[in-house]
Image (cartoon, rainbow, N blue to C red; front, side, top):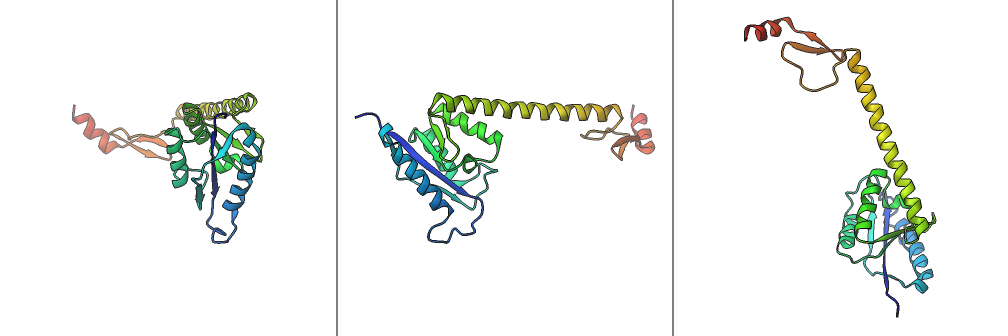
Amino acid sequence: MDKKIRCAIYTRKSSEEGLEQDFNSLDAQREACEAYIKSQMHEGWVLLDKQYNDGGFSGGTMERPAFKELLKDIENDKIDIVVVYKVDRLTRSLMDFSKIIDVFDRHETSFVSITQQFNTTTSMGRLTLKILLSFAQFEREVTCERIRDKIAASKKKGMWMGGKVPLGYLKEDKKLIIHNEDAQKSSNAF
């Protein structure tokens, strides 16, 4: 028999609202992902029993208990594919997404978003991912350039851009002004 491909489902919902219901958002996500994995049985996909459900946790942080457990199991080579309902269930941060994919790549783990045709088990899926990460990197670099340019322009206008104010000066309206009393003390010290 061919090698079994171990699949884990990760579900997340930002708020706790509705989680007390018999069938909630996490259950709906899980059910859809289970059906997708079942449709891939011919490829050797098998669903792991362990569940990774984060109810009431934002996708804007990686500080989620089930998500941390998922990453730990990936690092221990227990998972081949992570299946999610939508990519934003995994994360809402491009920077975190890049970190997550780095962990996945190091441990040869793929991920599939069942509603967005996103599948890194294929060469096209990996290419799409690399293009998205390239744009994320570009966006970070452009943001850094804008910040550097703004700081340089502010400095040219004589604006104080942070840090400890030198002895003999005060910061007033984002500018350094001489504080005569302290300036006298510092000049007398030499």
